[in-house]
Image 1 (cartoon, helix red, strand yellow):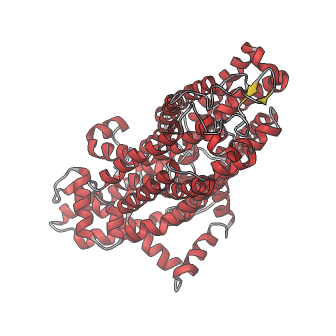
Image 2 (cartoon, rainbow, N blue to C red):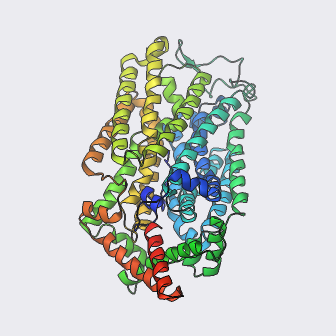
Length: 586
């Protein structure tokens, strides 16, 4: 999952749980804050449809590739494992590009309208895929949809973090991941149903000519009549491609009713509009003291970001400024250390094999002895259920037991599971069809693999990287870590079909090796970030950046407070204390 899927200017679980770097522990529990902010929860749940779209598009392709009516229309994709990899990965490569162009679009048009623009692009791409008659048309549709997916996986979490309240932002990041898994689940079971439209075979009267005598398979070059498929309808795969337009339109139309991010409006100097937006999101009157205190805290952070760029990069603008900001991420040992940890976590998230399972689940279950598309599609649907349910523990465990224990346990669990699956396939080979017990044992360990990955590297891979970057470097650093996960996702989607075709059981040992490496990397290099501020991260990385940023942020807050506070000295003292507290929590 891209797992997402998520990042972009992904917000850290701690940053989002407590606000930006200058925070103290929240005084209210997450459940209390959710009950007190139903509008924010509803808005975030609605916006996370962007994650659902990504998950759906991830899952929809796996079952389409096994449908005989699709194979009859596009035999080259069906028969050529390398070309099949390009079909899957075109969307991922385009998503990598979409994640790169998202930042300037979000700054130019705002968070709200960036989401709407991405929905329009996604709808166009989905429509082209659903109506595809040629391979180029299909690839163009996937590329267009991929750009939108990359944009959505960046902009939606950014929007969610900027409108939510301190204390629940980390929970909302996991909510985004949960929607990705839900999208995968829905696509799996929807295609299990559409698989039966017109029958499960392209030409029921023509016997299979592919495979072996004991295990014949469909060959689209010989097993299709002169008039095409007389059984399974092309609607079986066109409908799933088309139906993803529905949640996209719901997201796009619904966003028209939601406010723009107050932080974005403040960055554009639109203070009154920002205050009105914050008032709508918090359901508080515009003159409420609590609302104005939070407003000033957000403004202090916006001014800090502007002053950080102005003071650190004097005289630079445009591309020279961008290059200078990115160079800073590797210019010192502590900065490079932070970036390396963030990128490696995202690398391992993909090279542990999660998306290989999602994209090619029916093929994998076929290797484990499930004969017939219908049975393998059913097993794939169950995988989707396990995937979704296994993400739920992260909502409760991530702040109770910490990041490192979950990563280590998940890494060990995935390693053991994949070694067993590889051993079963290597030991039994093609005879698994007649050794049902061994085949089902392998399938069970595929599910166990998914359980271990879904509560550990799937959500934490998105949460942890942004917890280690300073306020001044976070947006640029997160764009690199996000690009890392998209590029790794692209590579995995591209090479897995050939690996399954040529390496067989070695494919699972390959991914298992990276699971073991991920455990070692976590133990040696990944710091525990639960309950820690970025000043604490300074100690880990032998740096002073976060401490210096905190002092600068308080200076700006004090300046703002001096401009806007009125009343007696005693009242000013109370309001100043409240403002500084809000800055720490926001």
